[in-house]
Length: 205
Image 1 (cartoon, rainbow, N blue to C red):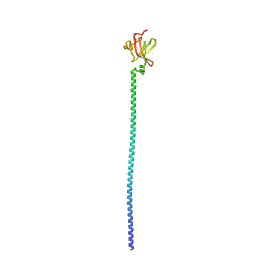
Image 2 (cartoon, one colour; image 1 turned 60 degrees about the vertical axis):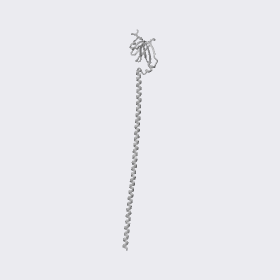
Image 3 (cartoon, rainbow, N blue to C red; image 1 turned 120 degrees about the vertical axis):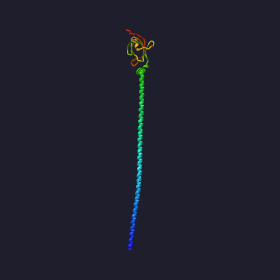
């Protein structure tokens, strides 16, 4: 009876140990399952974070590229504006130079004097006198009151005789009677026309 009881007790102890082992196995399996689930969740979270970080990085790169392109476009626009201003300034300078050149050509055509327009518009004075000397293109006259007048001629001065025929300055000699129409150009008397009234070969003594 005692032996039977002992065997029964041993059987119960063995059964309890088996239950503990099974329970431990189940706990280990559950722990492994939880670990695997947590690992999967952690990896999923990591993947999401990486994807988010990559997206943010891509957005940052795209934004940086857009900013750079905008700055480049702005710089190119500034360059175009400067080039436009330069072209306008050059065109204005060329116009000014052309205008100055045209004005100089007009002055040269009018006798090479800046006073040519003023001289042409000024009222002419007519004087009758006798040529007492010649020096280059200048005639020195003495009028009826014995006043000496130095009359300058140029390529615009009309030289003629009493019959309105053209003569040369060499034809007007000392002692010749002339009629001169002149205008003031500064301090100079510039002849518009000189008429040879009476020519002589030699100056009267």
